Image (cartoon, rainbow, N blue to C red; front, side):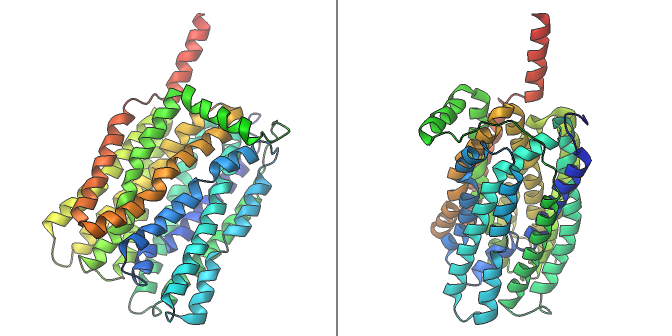
Length: 431
């Protein structure tokens, strides 16, 4: 392994450090708790709340096919990753500046600046991910990726739980007033994003032979589309992922249901952040073991099953309408499941893409997978906002559950790549 993956230990630590700091940063501005609550205090228009996740997902996913063609011709991809990080990760400082200068006097201005900052941050991060995954695939062996994915998820999760308690205090009655409390959360987020860049800088990228020139789009696009047409398993994985993306219909609105319908205080958002992080830690422990023992297909199925259980639990709470002081803790189980579901996407879906793609075509596979997924992932939260605005939370949660149930059913037809390789090797030996 040392010859095939030089600097394995150093790169393991560098990737893990980047990931851990990123997890902590995102805990301060969680897209499922903090950001929807922030937007909800600036506007009560539900589609606009859903637009946050739409912009974040769309800007992150859609440009990746463009990035795949660009980075395929680069012998060294680390400078591309670092440059984009330095451009995008300070963007939330714009939101902090507007809060310090205007407070809540101009909520429309604060909304516009936030959406602009979010779009730039997500786009630069998404563009860098194709190169990030390519470096990862050349530095971390497949049989060690289970423990690699688990290590930063667990460590980052434990530290993010501390961040969750910080969120609780900052948004609580003893914290700063609105919007300065959220400004402080954005500032803490940027601090850890900068620290993650330090870890990225310590990566030792191995050499790689690549095509010398970037392919013209008239050549590249037909070749990429051919990959999708010829690789049945890759095509099926994309369908499974698109249906699973319907989980995004309700994602920004679980916390709004808690504050607007269950009448829970903003202080409970910190509890939800911690519950989500705890769910991610628990799932990372289980899925890291499951990945190395059984492969990525099983992890993908468990991930979709966890996603399905989230709207089902929310529906149950919606109809039972629990009362008393335990309501916040009961509802926190929804966020525990969200965190567990998130933990499985990298170890399941993304690892399947890395394992089923030929090494010389990996950027194209990653870029195509994320761009295709972005088409529905991008619009799902916005559609969820429109659905909620015209119907009810029960219908929103029910529609979400139906999409995830269809995804789970189709995932049974996926084939584990490691077993496929073993069968191919056995056939070659017998031949």
